[in-house]
Image 1 (cartoon, rainbow, N blue to C red):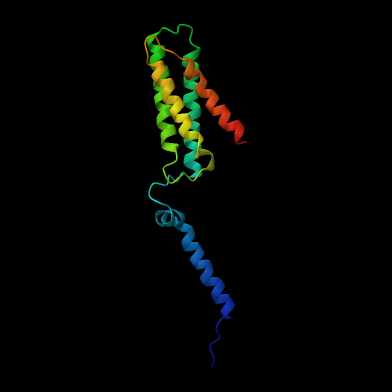
Image 2: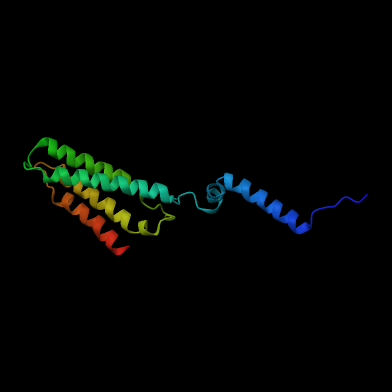
Length: 150
């Protein structure tokens, strides 16, 4: 009696389907990045990028609210402004491209300038008396970058 074997094309499809199913369960891209990107390359996933940009937007709202308060000489207002600027600087620094670059094209030149502007705003806001002019311009940095990349 002769045993019937499935056609070789069907075996190839079955093998390919199995390999793709297994590969789909693993994060092969992350493993490949370890070997294909230089160590100082800052890979920013889309999810992480959106999350950090949302955090920046939230801190910008906090900053705007702190700047709108009536009495600009209040120590609590200065503290709120400084807190928001510090958080924006930290978030921006984590998004900034390393020496080898970044995975997000919009971050190449603009984020470094933005972080520097936030740092200058923080320094001016921490002076006595506080100078909030640069803090007010931080939002302009966001608008400028987003207008260019629409």
